[in-house]
Image (cartoon, each protein chain N blue to C red):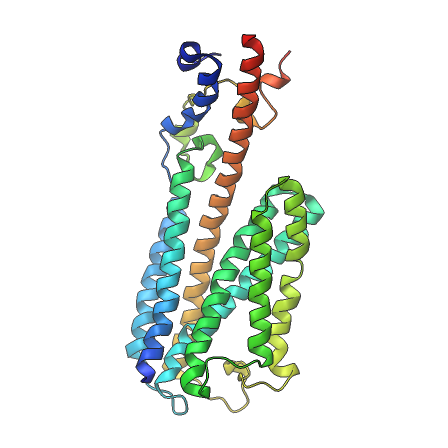
Length: 264
Length: 73
């Protein structure tokens, strides 16, 4: 089949006409009805969380107003852990099955993990300054989290290297295997070593977090999990589209080459 | 600086950062969607669209990187 554009403009036109999918009538986004519903639910959840976290809950007896940062800091860290867990799972599955789907899952969730690790570090620093008198100390929890951040950035840098996509995916998957062990190190650092960072609030001996404070904290975990799910779906679709565009570019080059050969 | 500064800064970091990242992801998805036919974006196709023939420059090359003209006799 030959398009009118190809007939009119020759081989070069054939290559350019490979962009014809732009006339595609389908909706141009990564949204679907389900993600739109989830997005609205997450937005409503964040509005509710902001009200509860900033105004609706009382001060803590020990931490005072600073407890309000604990409605976003541990939640950010949890999303980062989720991202790393899925990135390692995707890496293992890619190395086992050699499936593009798992490679894209690993890439997408690692990026989200990096974003939320940064949030966890920043909110932790903002909590640490008034609580400890300093933004940063090289204790085990903070140092291991910084190492996790560097590992995630290294993983994402590796994904940007030019070259064979399969080789890149395999190399990235090998780095991705290190994420969960690093998360375990971060998580256990407060129990394995003596740190300035407190043990997990909910498992702290003698900690009495209850009532609206406990509800707000748990509600925050639910809202952030919803956000993670929404971001993962959209980021995965973006990664899928990038791969499709790359394949279309290869097709375009092949088509142009063939057209060049037949025109001689 | 009062505690309020640190609390507000922390919330803005997370909420603003999440919103900015989500916006980047959505805009990038929109830009890329324009370059990919709907049959390669299953999440955005409806039964009506799936039954419609999609205009293609050549019959075949969109099926896969090495399918199409090369595989023909």
